[in-house]
Length: 534
Image 1 (cartoon, rainbow, N blue to C red):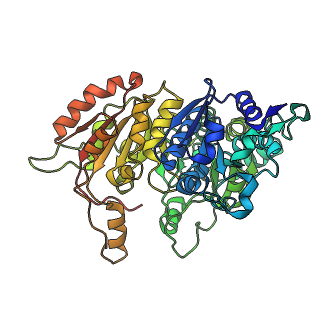
Image 2: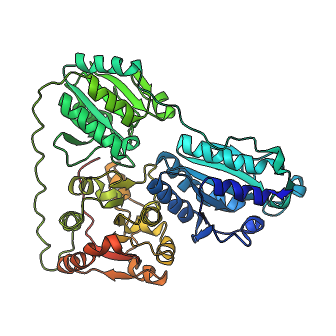
Image 3: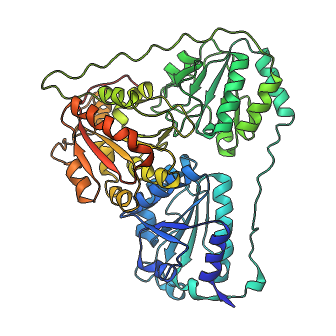
């Protein structure tokens, strides 16, 4: 006989798990006490940071990360981050503690009503009927998270861990799950025929195509058919090299401008995302007349909510590689070279820096393989224009829109793949949602460069309120000292007062990014200026 805990630890080892991200609570102590040496507990000081780090780690490694959360309070605190993990396609296995099963009916202190607390954001959730079912549920959660690329939750009452189980009974879950072959099949011929018949095709790419094989296949395809390529609006990751001559830019997230951008095209091939993501609602048709849409994605949810004539469930890399070999080549002129960003002169004496001046300084220095984590809503269009993604996983953002993702996710990305430099560009308001994540970044030697653009306000919210015709009712928070907060959490920090100082620090720090084992935060005051409408 063995215990539920021992059997579950065995399942985690079979899956290759070597660390658990968490913030401890009393209902998890029977699982966490005397955790074996081959499992490292990675501590976050708030559950949002815990899930954010695990999300970054899962995105970097491509395999599920294991998270431990504390009953109602822990799961409740983590819901926003779990929503971001779901939309960001980050596989997570989430173990949630529950009160002792033997008196749950009496609703003791810390008993949680957990089955609906995270809403629709988990890809799968189970509260095993018996303690003996816990190890199988954890194994299935691993497969569900990997297959559906999101958080899979298992709720475990605290007394379950010590219950004995007979290993001879086996587990009601397979050891290994292999995905369907995603063989392109006849769908490739159908899509190739549509492309060949189109007069002016266009491609739209999304986060589901953010890997080397998909990038290579898409480059081969667009070079063969001569189509422009747009990135989905508000994408969590880049689906195509943004320095390629056929990259056209980022799709607008409102109907009027979307119709304008796609006008003149008769076929849109959408790869690795749904068609088409919007932001603020506008009346009128979504698409211009005469535009047919084909969507290719491995995510059935994306296919089912797309407005498309044809949807194909397939691996983007495999499908697009086969498609490139079937379509007829055509000679089409390369897009006019996008104008080089206008040089940003340093601010005059006494003037604050603008965000674009900070981005320009970074653009001149960051290597092509940098992982750029973005959470600066008021200046995101400028960042995307000046700092294009040049390698897979070169851009990572909070696809869900909630703040607090970028800071801990950057630490998790660096922890998951120490071979690549990681730079996080954050607004000061964004950083404050997860500032405690700096403690974990420092504690676990995540050599991230954090660049915080400090304007002492929620600039994008101010701008949206003014566009609505109103006045923001909230105050600025210019007295908040991000530099000092970073130091209080053990993270080295520098307050940058001038453009010359920024350039000098970047020249010093950027060459060390690949080998850094210590985070560094740059607190950079910037003016609150308007940007192009998104």
